[in-house]
Length: 274
Image 1 (cartoon, helix red, strand yellow):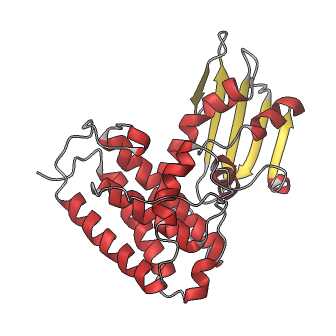
Image 2 (cartoon, one colour):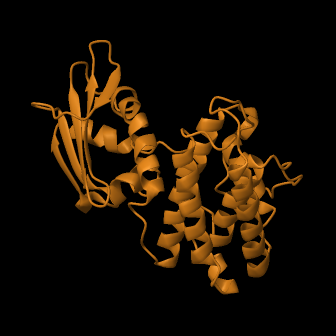
């Protein structure tokens, strides 16, 4: 048996992004591993450690036994503590140690994917004792690795791959969260519609509609007389939705029309990643 067709796009996206990450970090000298990334408290080394650690967990490796320092200002909740464990345990690893472990982990994951015969709905181990399906876990890895590839590109001044396979999986993940952002978090009124017009390497137009009960839904058709229309480029969209920037930092890249209070509430609630 081979990888289920439903899972293949996630495997392809993960492979594309992880190879890009490897290409980005392999030539780095020791000091460059300490560069800050858009992730609070994380250097290039920390971010690559995170990627390695979560793929090791996908391989079924045991989590490290490690005590976190008490002075990590960016670690404020249980989810962050969970993620920090794989990072802090590698914090003093050298550049050759990092690239060697990354290369070895990629080899092992590629072998795992070649031999993967489980059904998409199979339950697997997830963070903090969760049990996502294999499909959910692979989709999350494709999403996570693409976003972190972009974090590394930002840290190293090497833009690219904004329209790679992982970008489209990221788009779909972020759009799935949009009805909740608009209807629940931002409190858009019943019967209203909010349009998102995104241009650039990944283009789309989506309308979030709020029904009479205040529930949000999303579709690809325009709305006549929306309460708010937000026009922005894809890079700004994903950076906002992934919490890499706040709206005030990129306000010159956002065109907003309609209710200013609702616009402000939507942009304030836009980040959907932990």
